[in-house]
Length: 313
Image (cartoon, rainbow, N blue to C red; front, side, top):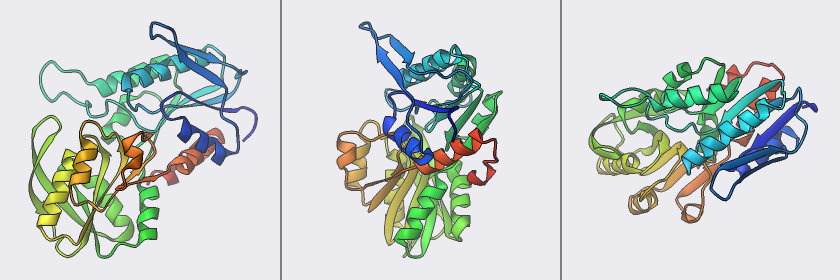
């Protein structure tokens, strides 16, 4: 990769950053990200990066606000050290669900975060599975948007599901589910639901046939797991043979694990854009796939000024 490629990581997902560096065949950059006694974040880069192509890997995983501040302060430290370019690698982009004004007097926080990242010094952004594609337009710098689809598809091919139907758990995820199903000519179904309040979902009916089929509920993220659990119950009631779920980002907040454990889901496929801890690591239903090779290949191509469009699938 050359001496002028530098990859650094904050505290959100150092394991993923190490895997990316292993793919690239380089060592992880030497950086200290710590806190003062009052909680303020302190960053010190421990090596020369003058003229380097710098990639900062940091997910907006819990605690979200702390990890966002770490990323911003790391970028400021790098910017003041005279690099050639700074790329913010954000496997999970936070505040993505606040992408528009759903009612009066509310913020568009996804745009605010984009402005903060740009102002802090990012020259380009590399991210995965944005909640909605329009967030790309919030940036006035180049943004490369990868998808977890190739990683999940490889796993599905290896397992070999029978008569698979890909189910979108809501109308907003139809494009994602359709693209996934089209790759292997799987059938497609859509769950029509009505959301009664924040983090609450009520399933109304299923558009499509799942009776006697293996079902894969596909979403970009599982947060409180309400949407996935309701979808799994609806598919089971409609006669699905086996029900599984898959997502790129496993935020798993609140009672998510309890909900997933209580419903008839054979497997929940997730990626390591957000690290799992404690009970999450012990949950037998969770199958974690690594996106390190996908991110690593994107970093290598960006560094070499090569096309990355073939990875946008």
